[in-house]
Length: 200
Image 1: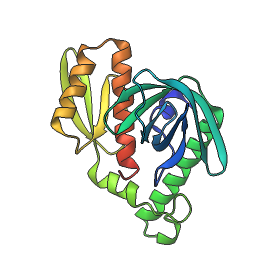
Image 2: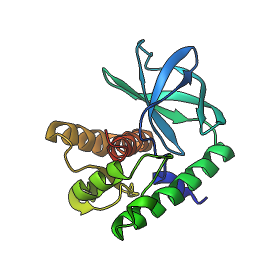
Image 3: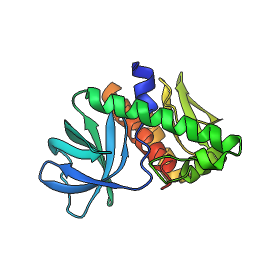
Image 4: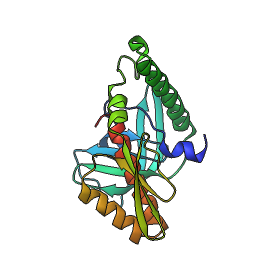
């Protein structure tokens, strides 16, 4: 899988899945090839690092991760290593989603399936609402609508309905930050877009 494809593909979670991050019991809201968005009933420190573990369709995924962003309810994790098994599961999930989208577009509802009996409702909702891509060039921001949550190399993509104060915070963090801060901003935006795509 190329780095560009790994950047925006993810597991198609139609509901949160249970797992562990270090000693914390967590729920996975979104999982991409580069990170995950989790929820926990216990507070997770800003600088936590630990082994992340979960099962997806009977296959165990285990890799090292660390916290990169956190709010009152959700924590963003960045993976510290690549996991070939996860890359394969994500590729299979992307093929499944594409097949369900094609079935949905052609009216073949019996083939409109992801994750067993679940339908493409979440993906259909994402298509109708879309995303906004913000690009930063020579000190200026430009925006455009996008039908896919692909992260650009010089900015970020977020759900179209994101609150303006959150958008402004992301723009300021990106514009004023170094390369690491910009990468973290893109990871946060990727997770936000992924959570919307999963129907949250």
